[in-house]
Amino acid sequence: MRPGTLSTGPSPRPEAAAAASRTVRTARSAASAAARAAFLGAAAGLGALWSGAAGAPAAWGATAGAGVGAVALVVEALARRVPARTALCAAAGGLAGMACAEILVRVLWPGPGTALVRPLAVLGGMYLGGVLAVAKLPELDVAGVLRLLREPPQAENYKLLDTSVIIDGRAADVVEAGFLEGTLVVPAFVLRELQHIADSSDPLKRNRGRRGLDILQRMQKKAGIRVEIHEQEFPEIREVDAKLVALAKRLGAKVVTNDFNLNKVCELQGIRVLNVNELTNALRPVVLPGEEMRVTVLREGKESNQGVAYLDDGTMVVIDNGRRHIGQTKDVCVTSVLQTTAGRMIFSRLKEEAEAA
Image 1: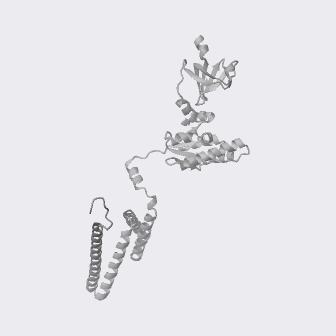
Image 2 (image 1 turned 120 degrees about the vertical axis):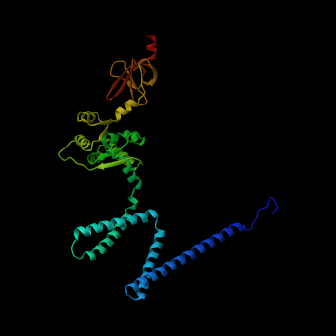
Image 3 (image 1 turned 30 degrees about the vertical axis):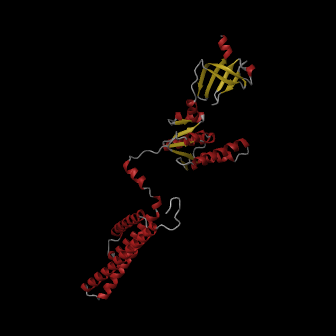
């Protein structure tokens, strides 16, 4: 072939490989057929020998032996199509069913007739055990079972969500970021309260309730987040917060909330609380007296001549003599920081006044 030209004819190598593969498959099929024929012949011969030893016609024994051999070949052909895991599971289930049936026969039928009942019970137990094992195979988590055998059992890590923190939505973001682990439990009475708010005639309440239901649905669909609806009821308790405290005690769970009053009640009852507001405050950047920042004065403060601004995280900045600068962006100097359970307030003065002083 000249350089630069392409061959349009078929290459002989793929044909030779295909022919060799067909030859190998044919030889394997022939060997397999010969082995099956030899097995049937051996089964028929053994049947004839056993029937002769028992004084029965040899033809009956040969027929019975050939029948048993044929059944074995059918089972072998079916087993080739079944995955190994399914076959092992069926075998284990069948053995377990046979053992249970044997025990039940010995306990419940110790009298006469055992010779007739035992084979039927063992056969039925083997069938039921194998069928149930194969049916439940998709639910079988072998890795999980092995992990449970290796690791010591641990207490379930429950987190109870109250209505306010569900509607707030920040807890869902914290969970999705991987900072809140364990099982999130939504009590049925909290879910009913959310539905009641979502059905309210007040548009604001209705929107808040629907937002809470949407956030719950989002968390349930998120991979890696386990959300459970707990049906435990406390009919003798009327208040939802009191029911939440009682359920937290029963489950040994922590309460996730941003409700200040519920936070205090749980602490008095000895229940661990995860307050989203406290987490938010802890993650805010530290501001020290003397630091400078640039803010936009939005409105007047409570005291005379005060102006109020807000940082990006919502922190309120009170500016002394800032009232006349409403609507303007000014540089201020921090004078003090007040930290409360409700949040943080920064007190400041205008930069030019601080420099003049």
